[in-house]
Length: 193
Image (cartoon, rainbow, N blue to C red; front, side, top):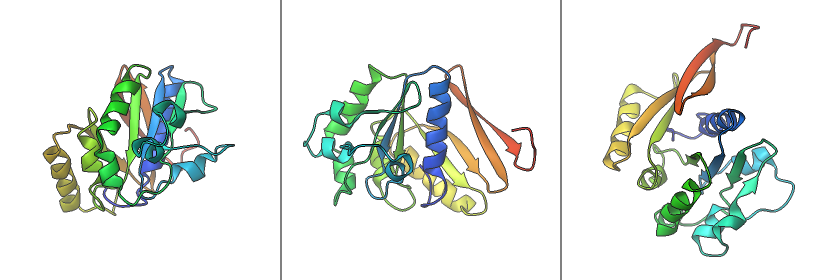
């Protein structure tokens, strides 16, 4: 999660998923930003797809929202229609059931959710996942706001796994190393990336 919209959370999530998939892990990117998803428009599927909101509202089974991508080992479940009640849908027992079902088929389930500084959705999602990672944009999020975000996640009982500092001045490269995540930075002016 992140503090505010437009911090690059969805880009970081997608790149993490791609790196894990390229490392041979079976990964699903679950788009739980039911308010303002950007992943569907960025990925531009070649057909109409049903999304997480369709499943959570009981319109389709879970298998109908899982899409294979053109990246080997990477699957996606898009958000679906904008829901009038995202927090209620994400708090539905079907969300936790979906996570548990996906654990049987995937090495990693990465969930992209709405910014915790704007709405409660991420705290609701936190109750169903094993851990959260905060994406913080340098010079946009104050130390106080980052601390408040951390406290909200901790109050949900979800462990904070780490923080990705996003900067317009540095490019973040994420690498999977034996099940843990290590972030390395590379100067964007360098020709060796």
